[in-house]
Image (cartoon, rainbow, N blue to C red; front, side):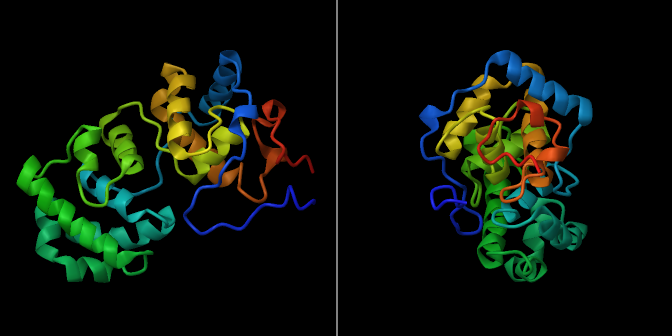
Length: 237
C-alpha cells in the first residue's frame, strides 16, 4: 500500500473526509434505483438498532448514542427506561441517578446533564411531548441535526437522511451522494434517493456500512452491490 493510499488514523467518533468529491461522478438515477431495489429485496423493513419504547425514549437513546455504539447504549438504557420512560419520570430520577445508570457510555456526564435539561424543556415548552419539527428538536439540549433527523424518521415517519460515519462512508463509496462533509452528503441523498425508498434509506445505508461496507476491511465478496461498486477501496479477495 502506498503512502498516498494508506488510510489515516482519525479520532473516534469523527467522520472521514473525502479529498476531492468533485471528481466523484454521482450515479445515474437508474443505478441508484437498482441499489435501493437490492437493499429492499434483502431487507424489506430495516429497523434501527437503538432500543426504545416511545418517541421520548428514542430521543434520549439517540442523544446518548453520540460517539458510542448502539449495543453499549442499549445495555445502559434497558435499566434507565425501565425506571423512566417519560420526561417527568426522568426528572424525578435526577441527574445523579441518570449519570450513574449511563456511566458505561462515553461522555456520560455531559449526556446525563443534557438528558435532564431536555426533559425540563420538553415539560416547560412542549407539554412533555417530543416536538415534531427539526427546528424544535434542535432547540433541545444535546440535540443536533443528525439526532433530529433520526427522531423525525423513526418516531414520526418523515423522510430524512441522518448521516453518521457509516452513511457518510457508504454514500461516498457508492457515489450515491459524494460529499466532503455531513451536510453535503445529507443534501445529496435528499436529491438522489427515490421517494419510494426514502423512509428506509438511512437504515439500509447504516446497516450496510456497519456490517458489510466496513471502514477498514469491507466485506466486498459478500456484498450484494459488489458488481455495482467501483470504489478504490473495493476488496475482491
